Length: 284
Image (cartoon, rainbow, N blue to C red; front, side, top):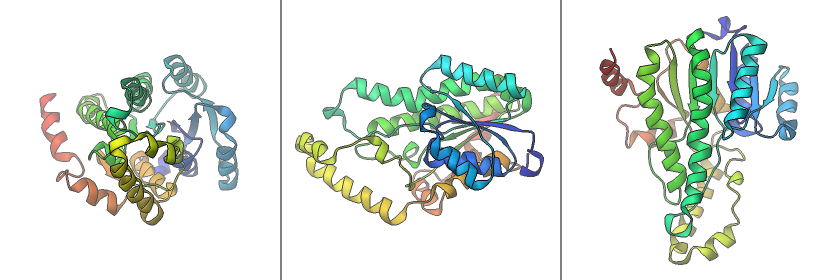
């Protein structure tokens, strides 16, 4: 698959109201894809529409709430009804979360998993029959936090670890029916994602009890890393486009040298080829 041959190809992207999803939707449309840009609340689509207009591209903007199976089914069915095909899906929608086990409820953790893990599964399951029909690609934006667990991100990293494990396990199976499965691993990205965690830092520190010194140190380090080393959302979108259009993209794609170095502390097999070579043998 290449960008030059993708003019009639259709991609559905989740979580496009801002950040990586917005940039990826614009980049895909500029590359010639029919881009269905979805978001939970269509009332928040003004920035997306402006970005598309500024770039001189057209987007098909639709509602899709990843935690609502009926909404997912309606969106995917609508794409097939209108275009007759689906060539790629980019699972981008997600929600940040900061907390530690003693100071949050299990229900809080369950909600993080619902959005960041089960939301991905809802969209992927609804899309797979159509991706089989086109020999398409299933692409999921995870995080370096899906490889290395990070303090006060237990629930978020657990969800991203789950996504990475699920997709790494699914990839060799999907390959037997012609579907490529890929994950994108950004590090710090200059988007609204951190703001979307919805923290009141003073309140969080006041409620942290014995964990307050550690939380303060973590927040100081995190703020510094976002101020000094964050990638732009457009740079990350470039990696998403690589997964969409490259001839043989790797299973695991980091979005920067920093992300490669960080994940490399745990993964000597950076592109996943050794793991998939092994597990691919399990299914022929």
